[in-house]
Amino acid sequence: MKTEFERQYEIISRGAVEMLPEGEFQERLKKSIDENKPLRVKQGFDPTAPDIHLGHTVGIRKLKQFQDLGHKIVLIIGDYTGLIGDPSGRSATRPQLPYEKIMANAETYQKQFFKILDKSKTEVHFNGEWFAKMSFKEVMELAAKFTVARILERDDFDKRFKAGNPISVHELMYPLMQAYDSVAIKADVEIGATEQKFNLLTGREIQLDYGITPQVILTLPVLVGVDGINRMSKSLGNYIGIDEPPSEIFGKVMSIPDNLIFSYFELATDISTKNLADVKAQLEDMTHNPMLVKKQLGEILVSMYHSPAAGRKAREDFEKVFSKKEIPDEVPEFNCDRLGGRIWIVKLLTESKLTASSGEARRLIQGGGVAINGEKVSDDKYEFEPKDGMLVKVGKRRFLRLKC
Image (cartoon, rainbow, N blue to C red; front, side):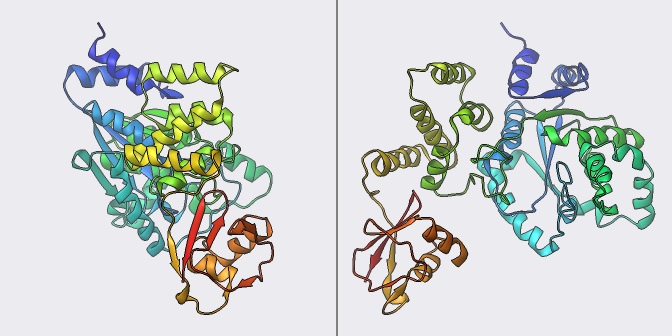
């Protein structure tokens, strides 16, 4: 029979890369259980782009595990750190976003956090709550607690410095600002991706300087995007957004390389340890088609962020289109009268929202990714006389029926 500490530690450590300092994390957890005093577990998010994607959920789902075990979750929305942008892993200074844009992005975060977490049990703060009130004297006092030499120990800064690439002074403040967040909310635990390790450890040092018991840290793997190369990112376009339509989530999952299937199951789903072992065995069995496992993954992910019925339907629609070469049961319609007379294909794609811009529309057309009634359109200047019922297909998953 497992003790409560063993049970919690097994859940919390699943998928973790490091729990630091070694031994201290376990001691802090055990003390929390023995004294019936929940840990304050923190993670920060800079809303530098709208919407939460699966890469974000690696940490949020770990927070959910802590929450389900009775600990207190504290989310920090970085309206002030977002003005800098985390320099971790960056080879150049991030462009600064207007504050209004950051706050607009933050709105989507606040809604989507609670697709996973229990809102009634979650504490949410904007770090502008404390940074906006700081005097310049207090900023200097914070800056005095760390040296440039220590900050230049960071691999990303060190590479930029040696290469002669500029490093703006405001970027050097980022680790200190993230660390001060831990002071402000008195974090016991902070979690983040492996590339955040320097910032997380800085939090321990700064808490000590302010007379607060230093946090322990837990690092998690970075989720690779659907391109199979880079970390999942909105700016790289290799992401799966949790608020996207079921067909889009499922279709994007089908596009990930086979070697990422297991890590997506481990980091992005809630399947049990036993079922995870079954997935691994299936993927290692050369007689088993990995596409079947990938379809299972797609259905699970759609079910998590929409519903089990939506997950089943997304799978059925995908199989109709790709396995049986059929058209989905539900295809959105577009009223031709909105454009009047002959239709320019680029305008149709943008007006109907099948593409986000005319540039994207042209690229898809030139790449052979657009068809009308099964016939490819290869000329981005193409115009046609619309007829009721015409079927427009864009890429592999997007359809539109003309209503004239």
